[in-house]
Structures are given as C-alpha cells and as structure tokens.
Amino acid sequence: MTPLTLAVQKTGRISDQTLDFLRQCGLSVNPGPRSLTARCADFPLEFLFLRSKDIPEVLADGAADLGLCGEDVVSEYGSDDLLTFERLGFGRCRLSIAAPGETDLTGSRIATSFPNTLRRWLDETGTQAEIVTLSGSVEIAPRLGIADAICDLVSTGSTLAQNGLVELDTVLRSESVLVGPEPSEPGKRATLDALLLRIRSRLAAQRTRYVVMNAPTASVEAIRGLLPGLKTPTVSQLADPGWVSIATVVGLDVFWETMQRLKDAGAEGILVMPIEQLVQ
Ligand code: AMP
Image (cartoon, rainbow, N blue to C red):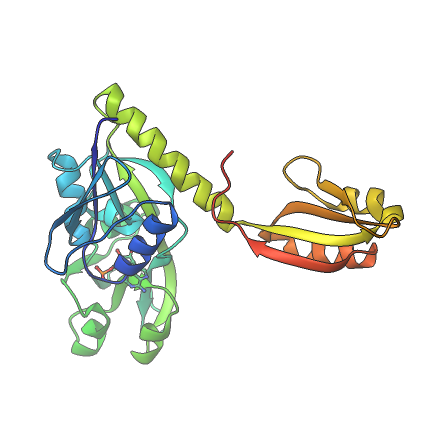
C-alpha cells in the first residue's frame, strides 16, 4: 500500500486523546519526546507532530496527506478544497461570542484569535462589528477595555464564568476531524480507505455494547422484538431446557431503555461488554 503522512497535534488539549484514539483504531504510534515524526509499525502511515494551527498549512503545501485537528482550526486556517473524511467525536467545543452582559453586537469591538471565522459569521448574520485580533488570553479583553465582547472556544463555560462573561451566540460547533485534500493517486486513496475502515469500525464500536442475557425459552419472541441488533440475535440453549442465552449488539442511544424492557420481558443476568471494533 502507498504510505500516507498524517499530521496531528504535538502537545496540547487534544494530543493525548488523539494518540489514544489512533491506538484504539489499531494503529501503533509511539512519538519520542522531541521527535517531529514517527512511523506507524503496523500500517503504512507516517505521523507528523505539529501545532494544530500549522496542520492546514502542511496539507496545503503537500507535506502531509491527512490532518487530524479541530474543525475550528480547519475553519480558521484551512483552504476550501479540504475534505472532512470523518468526524471523530472527541475534542468537542464551540466557538462562541460572549460579553460581560447582554450586549448589542452592532458597532461593538469583538476580540478573537479566529478573525477569519468570525468575519464570515458577521457577514452571514449581517452584523456590523469591529474585529480585534489577539493571539491568546482573549477573555480578559473586555476587562482591559480593548473590546466589548469576545469570540473564543468554550467547552464547559467555566472560563467564561470565571471572567464574568455570558455566552451570547454560537459561531461554530467543533469536534476533532480527519481532513485532507482528495488523494492525488489511486494508491493513496486505497490506503485512506483502509484507514477509514479502521476509524469507522472504532467509531461504530464506541456507539454500541455487546449484550448477553439469560431468558426463559417462552420469552424469546418477545425479547427478539425488543432487540434492534445487527441481524437477529444469537440464541443458544442452556443446560436447563426451559432457558436460553441470547447475545446481541445494542446501540448506546437506546441502551438503558432497552435494558429495562429486556428485564420486563423476562431477561436475567444481563452481561454488558464493550466492543473493540465493529467492522461492517
Ligand atoms: P491547543 O492547541 O492545546 O489550545 O488545543 C486547542 C484545540 O483543542 C482546539 O483547536 C479545539 O479543537 C480543541 N478544544 C476542545 N475544547 C477546547 C476548549 N475549551 N478551548 C480550546 N480548545 C478546545
């Protein structure tokens, strides 16, 4: 398979989660403390460790084929031809406008490290406001008197609250994504498809649990009707002739309500196990 280069965050808020996620996808990645590159031992992938905001740049100049970073970074620094191959479900945050209290943004000054994204949002919403670009510590700008409002990343909202700021509008919702330009050669596309199979198998596994339960034979039809599993569940006879064991996969979105209904239908001793990969 043709090797691909994947740029990921070196150190920062999503770097540990990125490495954990890649390992859960069955990719071995062992960066040295100061190394900027590492080779994956069991897949044709070379890792580049960079600052998040440099990832779109290496994709644009062809130094990397793929990037893993937040959608906020893609929005702010990425070119229009970047494709999102998969959303990865971690590093969730939102780019929000906040101010010391209810504030009319018209004619206001908004401090941000995301001037491009904010500019697009102001244009889309027809809001006339001045952008004050800062590279960090944006949340103190209103107190310093250099802005009336801020536009910054928020996850829990506790930093905003500590600085006496109230969230007014959401400019962008973000999570970590795998992005890149369309691969230039068929060999690279094939490697990307193999990588996406691993990633999607892991994402599907995170959304499901493997469930095994005992039930009276007379309850099997009722229990089958409750199980939205992959196909029909596996039903095996127990040593006790009136009882069976039923195994299936249940989605997390309906997990607890399904468990309650299974118990009500006569299921007992319900075992719940995580799934490593769900390849479909
Ligand atoms: P860092 O370069 O360490 O500041 O990491 C920033 C990246 O982490 C951002 O690009 C976001 O995608 C993600 N992130 C998730 N939650 C937050 C948050 N509350 N504040 C800043 N970044 C966040």
